[in-house]
Image 1: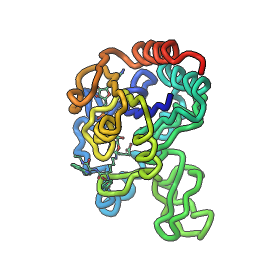
Image 2: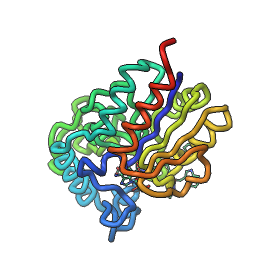
Image 3: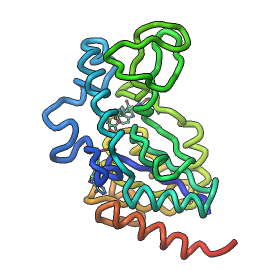
Image 4: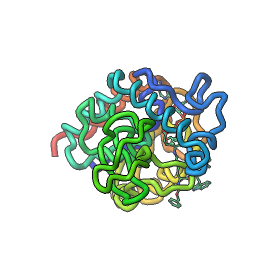
Length: 233
Ligand code: BJW
């Protein structure tokens, strides 16, 4: 049974990582354009570096919750038939034990060098302007995908969406493309689609099935049902 799971900020909310657009979210009071565009970084790099350095420190203390853990168990059962595509830049899926995780919007733990395009582990706070380990330039930026930039792994994701029998979206508002369009791609290729979210999202109407509730409750229940229906092959 081939399964693609798309996760968003909602799956990490109960681990204490703020979402983007909910009340009390990361961007409440901030315009998205102030922090999440290449233009904002050019205009005021120090503010953006401080913002991501602070988030990196915060997620260092965060623990995976039962939703991340349930997906890691699902991978242990399904092996390479499960692909988790996450929009999150935190490492909570990996910390829970998942290994087949594609970070569509990059990772907080990595830095990218605009001079040589090299990607490397973040050596410390980027506000301190550490040198690129490959070329020595002191202009590393967080390896995250801002508005107007190309997300990672789209070819692999397209192939997985075309081949999957089940597509699930967990804790995402459906406000950002191309991720918001994945359900339509999967459904058009015959997958059964399910949304797991605390509340309705912008794309709820596109799914075959919708389950409302906190990820820490609805995700383990959904994974258990999926495996019970799967049976030995
Ligand atoms: C819970 C919960 C609990 C809470 N349990 N649930 C087509 C149409 C229109 C526009 C475009 C389009 N195609 C491209 C665009 C432009 C643009 C875009 O989408 N703009 C929109 C404003 C419309 N997209 C881009 O620019 C992208 N690049 C691109 O498209 O390249 C060209 C291309 C062309 C053609 C094909 C392919 C590519 C790049 C987008 C980059 C987004 N980057 C960010 C920042 C990353 C770094 C960082 O983290 O700081 O990614 S923006 C931000 O939003 C972040 C997130 O990953 C992303 C999605 O947010 P998410 O995860 O959904 O969080 P929230 O807060 O919105 O929602 C939380 C949800 O959880 C809610 O639903 C809650 O109910 C729920 N919840 N608690 C369960 N306990």
